[in-house]
Amino acid sequence: ENADGGENLWSSLLSEVQTSRSAQLPSSKCLLVLGDKESGKTTLIAKLQGNEDPKKGSGLEYGYIDVRDEYREDHTRLSHWILDGDTSHANLLSFALTEQNYSDTTVLLCVSMTTPWNIMDQLQNWASLLQDHIDKLPLSGEDVKKFQTNSWQRWQEYLEPADQQDATSPTKKGRGLGDSDGEFELEPLPEGILARNLGLDLLVVVTKTDYMAELEKDFDYKDEHFDFIQQAVRKFCLQYGASLFLFIRQRRQKL
Image 1 (spheres, rainbow, N blue to C red):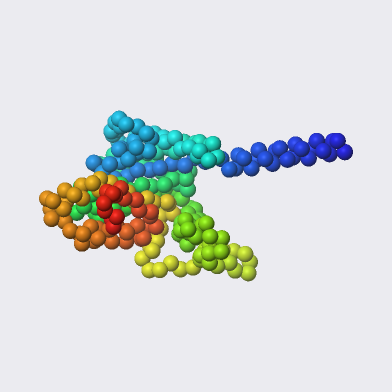
Image 2: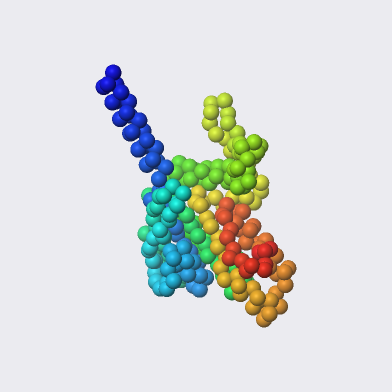
C-alpha cells in the first residue's frame, strides 16, 4: 500500500511537471520584419526591446526581444530578423525564413505615413517578394496545405475579446463544421478574404502617424484622404489575413 502510495505521488508530481512545462511560453517563435528604408522598422523593434538608443544595421539584422508574463511569472525570448529596406538583399531571407521555422514565424510589414502615396505599392512589393521566397522553399504540397488550413481555421475561429469572456456567446463555437467522422471542415470565406493565403501570421504596422498633421498642413489632406488610405490598407489585410496596427495620435481615432 505504501509502495502504491509512493508511485501515485510520483505520478502526480510528474504530471504536474509535464503540465507546467507545456504551459510555459514557447521559445521557438520568430518575427521577420520587412519594409522600406525609413519605415520605422528599427525604431519599432527597439521600443519592444526597451532600447532607447537603437542602431541601424545593414543587410539582415538578428536580435531578440525579452517577453515576460507577469501573471504566470514566466518569460521567454522572441527572436527577430530585420531585413534591409533595399530589396536587393532579398536573397538573405533564406537565413530568416526556412522550412524548419515556417510555422513559428510571424511576418511584420512596416509602412510609414510620411509617404502615404507609396503605402500600397510598398505593401504589394514586400508581399510579392515574400511570396517569391516562399515559392523557393522546399515545402511539400501537404505542408503548404496544412499551413494554409491552419491560417483559414484561425481566421474562422477568431473571437472578439468580449466574446471570449462570454461563455454563452453563440460565436464561441466558431464557424467550422464537423462531419460524422469527426474531421474538421472549414466553411468558405467571403470573397476577397484570405484570397492570398501564405500560411503565415502577418502583421501590417503603419508608423509615424504623427506626420498626419503635416499632411493636413502642407498637402491639404482631409479626412476623406485618410479614410481612403485606411480602406485600401484594410482591404490588403483582408486579402492576406493580416492584423493591422496603427500608431495613432490621441485626437484622431478613425485611422
